[in-house]
Length: 205
Image 1 (cartoon, helix red, strand yellow):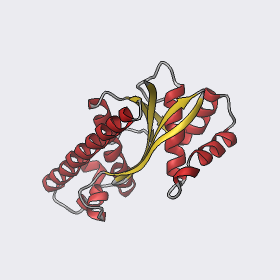
Image 2 (cartoon, one colour):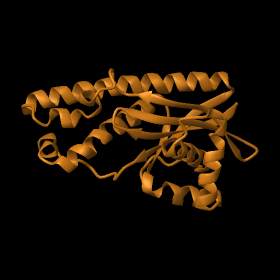
Image 3 (tube, rainbow, N blue to C red):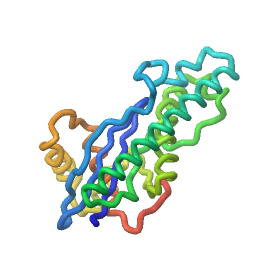
């Protein structure tokens, strides 16, 4: 059975997801999809900290916890489905890369809600954390890499220049058509990095 890896490029409420396998040292895209991590794709749920900004603290905490729980459930269901479909393709999925923003630890909820900049950060981090926890429950060993460091890391591991990697990521998506944006390209390179990174680390750089 071939080894597969998955890359996650997460935004508020959804994630670009690309799964790769490796054939003769060249990656092949097995699955490309966009996974929704909220029940309804509305601003209220996609931006839970923004929504909670004017709520009483107790109500805000309950609301955010509810969104977090739903995101975790949807992420878990998506990863399990991905593993099952890849198994049907003759691939085993047990590794991947989760792209991070700043990677900085957030303060307590009350402090987050007092800072508009932290609110923006927290909205994205909630959904990244949902992917991370769901991946762990599904047996995925996730390499965590800051998005701004992805090209450098992938270049070091592959021995290819950053420009060549971006072009290859573009070509890999050609058979899939639109959307194949920066998100899909970076998810592709993230999955490729996980396949190249042996043994796989489980900590952010």
